[in-house]
Length: 102
Image (cartoon, rainbow, N blue to C red; front, side, top):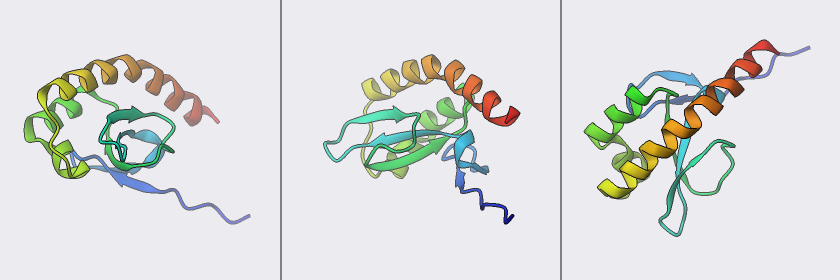
């Protein structure tokens, strides 16, 4: 049986190429709302980050999300995303480990 191609994406902070399922997607909806998308299927412009808080902080410092999402992201949104990122990090890591076992 032919092996399927694994889609790769680049972390906007550390610039490391990784399989799409190992990254957390931050999405800007057409309404301008910015949120975390664990499913990877929400409509809108997406940017990918490693599942590490250090990568999120680097993206915040260098304004990598501003460039990737093609929209200015203000400080309140970064603070909210950071809190959301910390909240979903454990959930994301558990799901990643389950996927690796299969």
